[in-house]
Image (tube, rainbow, N blue to C red):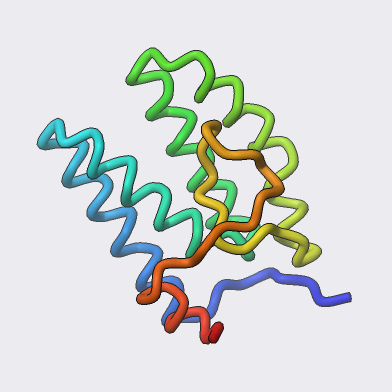
Length: 120
């Protein structure tokens, strides 16, 4: 069994860029774009416990900010299970992490992220 503990440097840079873009969009009240970047951060970081958990933490905060009860409840559940599933490398690749999708559903990965993950 493979254990994921530390995100590779090139993925960490891409992950951090998505978080940065999320913050900029949030500051400018571009909520749709902010969420888009959170989903991308989730896809990039979902195989690594710290980044995966942090993406869900930001999604939870976003849900509170938007007064979205479904998102808040969905993120609380995901915060409890997401990190350890990353640690044991048992995540549904491509899943965007929001409460609008089933937690275990695999989803298509955007081409640019696919290249980063070296999946083809």
